[in-house]
Structure formats: structure tokens, C-alpha cells
Amino acid sequence: MRPRADSFDLAALRLTAGEARSLELSEPVEPFELGGQRYAVTPSPVPICLDVSRTSHQGWALRLRFEAALEGPCMRCLEPAAPRFAIDAREFDQPGGGEELESPYVTEQEVDLAAWTRDALALALPPQLICREDCAGLCPVCGENLNAAGPDHRHESAPDPRWAKLRELEL
Image (cartoon, rainbow, N blue to C red; front, side, top):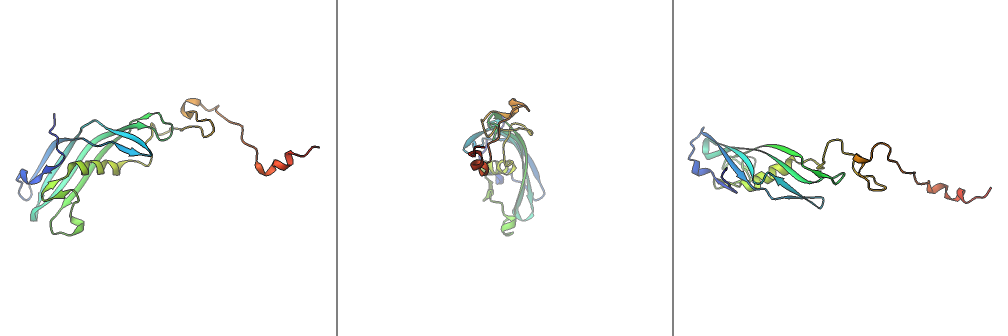
């Protein structure tokens, strides 16, 4: 089993400039709340690969890789959905290099893996979590699942209200 680490002490690696190390860790990720629905992250904890490289001037080049799925209702048809995402995120932290060269996840040579893992997954999410690419969703009139209803599912269209007075005429 991989060691669990909500944060990781980079100084403990004792890397010199140009050295690198790859670490196999695991990180629990809190469920996401999207559109009023709860989506659990699986597997739990998520196995992650953290690549750490020491740069010159006491800086760090970091790479986070993992695969995870979000399990919850499809945003179109409400059936169970579990889309998978492959994450490959990079951060660079160079103290004194300005705002562009400072990582929000590295503080005093400690990387916040919990926040970085969750944020990297959140950035990879599509606008809608769906059960399959061609999900037809629910019928807006009766609420039937259009994936199961088939092509014959139809409703009589409502009459145009602009012609309502003409229907009252008796000829």
C-alpha cells in the first residue's frame, strides 16, 4: 500500500540542484458538489505519482500524475455515471522569482498534496458529467429517459397561443 500524504516535506528528500526523485503516494480526495449533486472520487485514496526535481537557487519543479473517476448521477439523464480522468499537472516554485514562479501549493519547502490533487482534478472536469457521450437526457415534457425511450418517443405540440381567438370562431 502506498503511503498517504496530505502534504509532503520536500526538504526531507535532500536533493541537490539537478537531482530528481519519483514518489508513489496516495491521497484521499474529498467528494465534489456539482449542480446540487454529490460526486465521489474513486479510487479512494487516489494513487498518485509525484515527480520532484531540484532546480538551481533552491527551487522545485514538481509533476503530479494520477487517474481518478467521479461517481454520481449523469447531469442529463440522472442514471449512474463514472467518467475517468487522467491528470498530469506541473508546478514550479522558485523563491524570489516573482509571482509567476511561485507555486500556491509550496510553502517553506512543503507541498500541499491535498489541495493540489483536488484542484488538478477540478480543472480537468468538463462542464457536464455525463454517463456516455451520446446521452440524450430526459424528455422535457414527460421526464422519460430518452436513452431508453427510442426514436418513436413524441408528444403532440402545444397549439400556438397567437391563434387562440380564431379557434373560438364558429363557422
